[in-house]
Length: 256
Image (tube, rainbow, N blue to C red):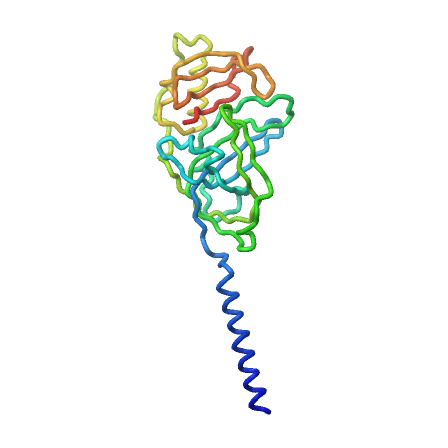
């Protein structure tokens, strides 16, 4: 009787240990680093000045013309995240090299996305295993002028380890002396040059070399502005000025 009980106990112990080992093998380690390629996105909303950060993975990123890869059919699922509190998140670097898309003004909306900045990256991050198979609950939708971009996302407890550029970042501004130009009576180019140099912004071409492609009336955040379309770079940078004071209000880089 004692031997029989001992045998049953040993069999039960073996089965229990086997189940535990199987369970441990099936649960991913929280320390595992996940690696994906896609886009880090920052949006800014008018009026309230709120910023949101997202990452969305992509099926493929064309390094020669990566902006064309930012299309709904090429995007997969993503996640919203807080840029602060990560181990090695290179926030200043990513912000400095993002491209800013010019967005059409919304009609009849009091709060809308006024800026969308993005950059193609390979992201390395950690995620609690409980959330790895969680289905996205939210949808990001944005009109970027020529098309609508859409992807699904969740707000996840990620810990970003690194973001590695998939393309060559824009270089720092070359040193130059900002000077008024005789054919620019309103000083648009001079003000843009001073603005960029004071901010230490990204750029591969010196701001002194800008030229004006066209000057048009426009609206920005519901106010009338003068939009100065510059002759650089990609699809053209844009500067926005107050019609009365000629003060520089906003500046956006041309998308690739």
